[in-house]
Length: 373
Image (cartoon, rainbow, N blue to C red; front, side):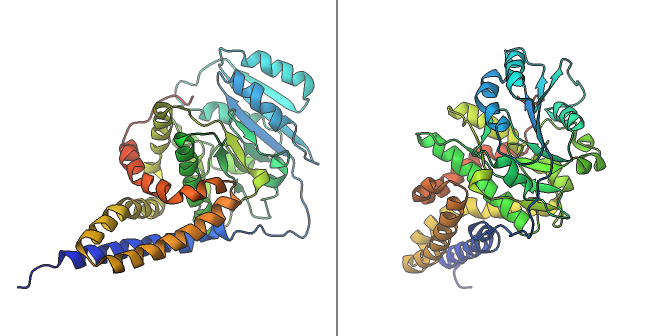
């Protein structure tokens, strides 16, 4: 029996893993790189209800809410703020803003919903209080990137559309942590937006998300996921989104930006909480996401092993093909999503994802926290 050629086995495994990665970049992520919004024969201005849930967010409300209230929108829009049992100065800040902005509608909650985890109860109250069919969600720590945010997001609707997915980014700051946070956020958006464009929508983010009020009530709101603290955005979209009823908006004026975490500990806690919902996704979504994560995780260890145990020229040829495709797709996608300053660092940020998966993989099985803020 001839000896096992481990060098060949490692190289062919590396080539197979690379082929899967190339498929994801070519079939899914390229849809963002080459995205062009569809030109409409006629303009539309649906009345819009913007919904903001806030708990002890006085500083964020003072800083960010004016940006939501001064939107340049030719049709009717209101801003519904649910002040959820805040004990800071949120109430007084909202009272002052209401004197200036007549479109602001404040709902004061003074009791906890003990059997409903997370922010689903205040969000449900806000949706019930909303006057208009088109709902647009944003968090209190977010600000629209332009005064045309409402207009651009509602313009994503067409005849059969019930859900519009947007990009919720983070402010650019100095330092390594900021780059890691923004790249991970971009990387996540690259996936859920491209999957939606491919007819496989699986999530959205509450920092920049729109859907119709009738969709919410037709699916009985969050009743099926009320026991899960998170998921008011991604799990609800995973349940209700289809190929035909979901659209995306990728436009510099339609981005929202949040204040990023400034310490490693706070960021780790935030991301761990977010990942506790992934196990509830539909099987096909878990398979596609799991396959991509697995191949990305093992890519660089296999690259190192192949360089050691096989002809380096063939290994670098395979690696180089993936690198060139990746560089091209990410350059165009980052430019479209306002993150082009990250592109010179993409190879190092891509390598970082190996350690990222090691850190956050346990969150997939961890029991989620019972409060949302």
